[in-house]
Length: 169
Image (cartoon, rainbow, N blue to C red):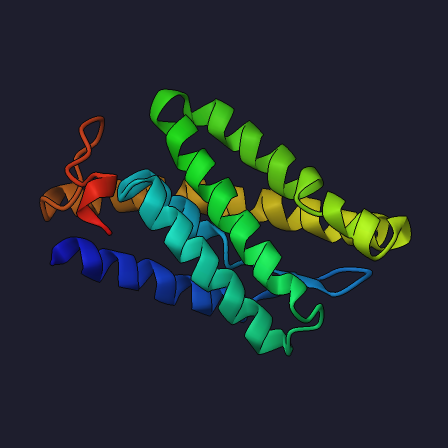
């Protein structure tokens, strides 16, 4: 039951992060990813992916769904990216950060260059890259600060995760 409470907390933090917007040339980028990244590290890739999915849906909702149904595609992309981040993080946390920066900052918006146009992609790119970097930095800082607190509560153990993907279904 404790795993679900943590997952719900990270989803709620993603919603709070959705209120913090970084203005971009086209649209805006929210700080809804960092709680999902932290969840992927502390609770496992699936939990982080679920938090990322719902975090993006809520961020889009709060912005009025400016891209319409394309936000469903973005939410699925976020699910997959954060899941992959969590899997890679288990082996190499630096490789996970580089992967997420490149995949979310540059590659995730590539489908929009085909669907909407290259101008949209290049207009979105600066805000997306900056937003990704900020989400990664905040996620890193929060993880460093949160792990010792959770260790004291016996919720998460450094180098030996107590929770696994199978715990959160």
